[in-house]
Amino acid sequence: MTATPAVGHAGTGTAVAPSPTGGTPLRAWHRLDWRFLLPECEPQVIACSGALDEDLVSGLPLIAPTVHTVTSPAGWAALAGTCDLVVLASPAPADLRPAVAALRPGGWLYAEVRRGRPSSRGPWTVRGWQRAVRRAGLGEEAAHWHVPTIATSSRIIALDARVVLRDVLLRTRRRRFGTVLSLAARAALRLGLVPVLVPEGSVVARRAEEEQ
Image (cartoon, rainbow, N blue to C red; front, side, top):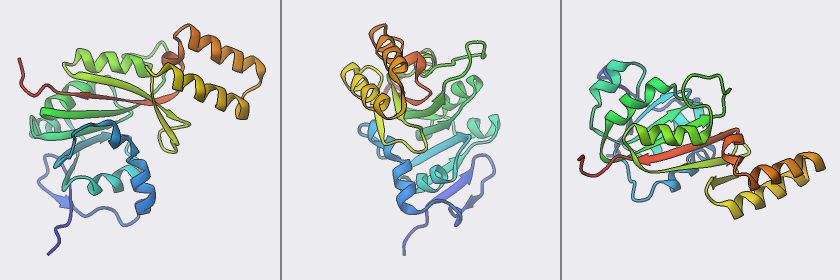
């Protein structure tokens, strides 16, 4: 007998099958390309929360037997210390602490974030979210740019990889930008401003194996 992946809402005790209206398997697998950013991560229990699109919801049960969708503080509390992987989509700053608490020692956080306005409360850049997860107590953090968008990314680039960033900026400007904007992109790279300008990206981080 083949077990059906459980997709539940934390705190309710119920499990439902993946939605039949979700994305195709190929699209769902493509939506999960970020999983290769997580070394040594073969999750058994995933918690997810936020602005979850259909392809992401359909894809998560492909990589873990148990997936919880969290919609409340009580849901996070019910999962404290049990999750191998927490997935956040466009989180609010208040989501970060309970999400981190849901991780077991050695568990991973993957957060999809978008650039906001400087007047926004909390982090408003991908790099800002990287600093926020570090302040929340996680380590091994890294930030990435999803090109061109999170949902349709053809490349996922570490923001610390300057040579690769330069190559992508040059390729992209030939197709989409004029001379002025391409020069601005080069200047941003030279001044270290690309992490501030990235429109959509992700942050991954890990909870320590043994809490100090």
